[in-house]
Image 1: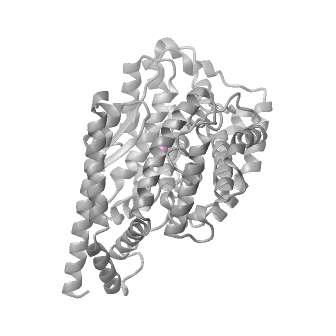
Image 2: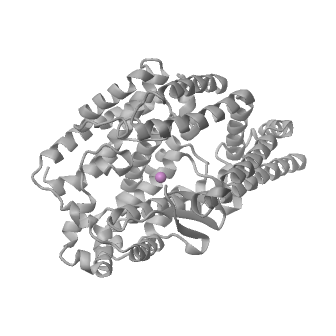
Length: 505
Ligand code: CO
């Protein structure tokens, strides 16, 4: 590369890194808002965040960025497609095109509409009445259609929405992947429901003092590799993980004194996200090579640690004696096997965020089928409640008693997040496939877990996934890591492998 080209790339990276620093300032404000900010600070915080996002937008859409990108593309045309510079430029081009293709008026209208729609949703959910919300959803759908037309898509407009969360993913592919899950899952859940074996779920609802829950939560997060010197654990209402920047990744949880699992598995989940962030290559901070691939891949890391590892028998062979000692009054009469069964109970329910590993993906399937049909014009918003309940009955065998526990339970649609739900199931699918590959390469993983050793698995994930940043798109990454494209077989085998012995199915 010529000297002038190197200078040019340096200048582009300098500008992009500056934008990323502004983003990370906004992340600190966001974390503070969701943890410690007093309620009175809300309006001022909104102004601070609006100022920063305005600055980010202005800097990123500056004509110089377009010039620099174009020149960088020309000078790099001979470099390997997966070389760091080519990857950075490819992904920056993708982001830049989206920003400049969408008219500012549309961005503002979406922002305004979703703010009001969320308020209408809160009201609708409170009254369990879809009427005040559906006109807003209609508006959002229309704006999102304009958005999809503005940025363009592969086959159908819904692809453009997916691309915001899972770059490169398409509705056609997703439909196939989810459809392959549907029947086997419905059958598995039915067989489980018919089984005489039931866990003693009350075990988990005994008294679990909060201070002790925090102790065991921190212990588990550290044991699987969360670096507490480069992170924090705090309390919040809606748990999340936020990467502020190199050396600073924060997780949050909420405790319930009468439920063991909520905080514990919540912490493992957020730690899984955090391990990905802590594993990104710091030297690429601010550039695509230093960022995560997609929401689905991010979720694969959280699900892997929360469920595949955290709800395994081997994990509890190590942790249960500690937990039993810590909560002796509540668990003295509970065996490891009873505890393990209780944390792996399968029971169809109405609320997605409380769903077990088997039924969870059917919750997502219902949402995907509905939002895809609405967006394609095959379903009217007025028909959502009835279709929702029908699908629930068909797939999960239960029917929500009201819309509050049905189609009004999630904030996503009101917040304009259409095409987002599928990333949750993609995360489950990726996690099972990644773990199957890890198990093949690292032969005695279960033995390691049973003795509290998790570093081999973490290092494997770092090496195969984290350190690559956005070098590969999700679909390509799966092939690189596991040797084949995404296949729902792995999740189904994993679930069967767990539930067959537990439920005798
Ligand atoms: Co998550």
